[in-house]
Length: 136
Length: 146
Image (cartoon, rainbow over all chains, first blue to last red; front, side):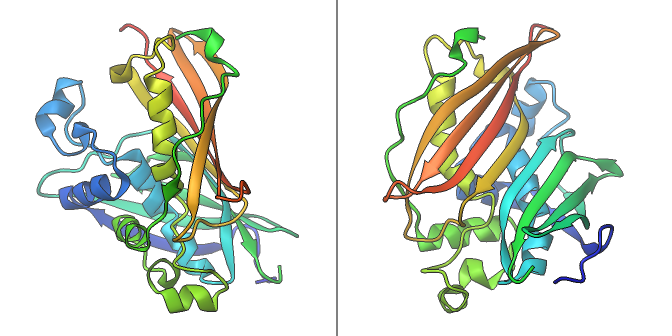
């Protein structure tokens, strides 16, 4: 753990979201906003179609860090800015790619910076995860 | 939006009991593969009382506080124009199954920016002993007339 270096990529992973993923997240989270499962309602408010819940993207994006941490520490702070929506096509779905890089290493642990992209563009800004590390 | 909302503190929400299967359901929904989220033995071996919730699970408890804010009669927030701008979770400790959590929302700031309004809502979430677990902070952008 102590050999972490700023700039190191600790994880890189792609997640395939489908409409099924959105329905599952709606049920798990209690967010039943219809723009996340009905194209007609999404288009009625000027969107191209069904979007992923921002909180689903946020929740998925931190998972590579959680996996990397294991039981050696925990997430103590996690923040994102929602900069671009993720459209989830009914047949194609949507691939979200997460790159997790060490931003800061200090006595408390580390800050991991996430780059989260969909369709070649960043969808979360200022996406930072503070982790505590046992023995750091 | 009503600028006098700034500083307003809402009543605490009814206690939310974190269920083990709810944690597992949420963990599956965010594509978690962490044994701490699913396996009681793995969680207790790591020093927790039960399965550990994923980092964004706190939104489930926070949600009822945002509902309080959006339905506040004098808030002047048009729900159909609300866009989620920023989100943050600051943890004192992870949420685990069995926790009984209560959330209290404070309106940290209300700002206007080029026809849009932005409200930052901080929900402090405590356990049944009153000890702080996590603060969930949302910035909501209310779009102005097009």
